[in-house]
Length: 303
Image (cartoon, rainbow, N blue to C red; front, side, top):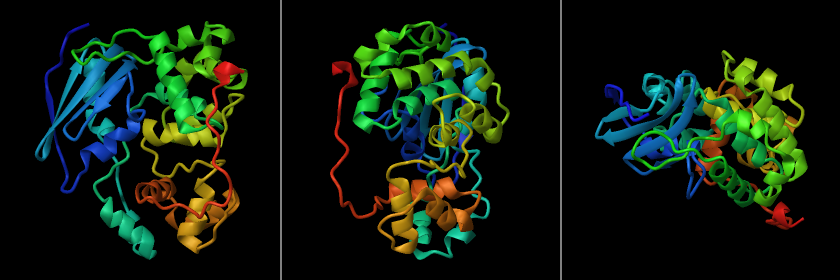
């Protein structure tokens, strides 16, 4: 498990922002499956070739990728995608220029790219846990589940591997309840775990979205959250989100509230990069006026 591949070096484009690009791959504050700072990023994974971990180390205009474990070669081969270096902005700068706010945000965050891990189930686990609850609740449950199923990842970083889908599928519901996950999300997670092997074989974002949304308990919001970082899909919009329609309506039309339909209408001029626009708004701290109470932080483990 400790085998290390030959080091691969990646050249970085001008203005590339390493930390802002890779941090979306990890749960904030603490993720048992990875770590990052301005110059170092670690990520564990269950690859088609076996368990592995990837270390990306930035030095100036170069990133050095090093893989550990049986999955090392697979991870190093796609290290550029994981670092967001396959993300093609295409005609986005020209489209962004038509809207002053988006143009400003596009310039400010021009070095941020969409990573593409090629790993569906790990991100799907997080997305299902994030359904209809606060981030604090979801991330607490994620950490507890990773530790419960925890297997040490190859390499010196002390990481844990993402849970094995087969182990998740075989675990009874009552095991998840103390982690703060109610039956509805647990069942969706276990259905996804049963289908994990087929999901990991999807050729692209469109196929993955079709297969994901065919699973009971997984809708457009969850699928979009997954394909944005699994395939680097810059057009994936989280339809059904509590905040994003309002944010888009406020930012693009000055409307304090918006529906999913209105959000998609306003994002249409950015087709191909609609998810990128939403991410830019989030990065820029743009939000609609708040009129109601905040969503409460609960613990389903107490119910």
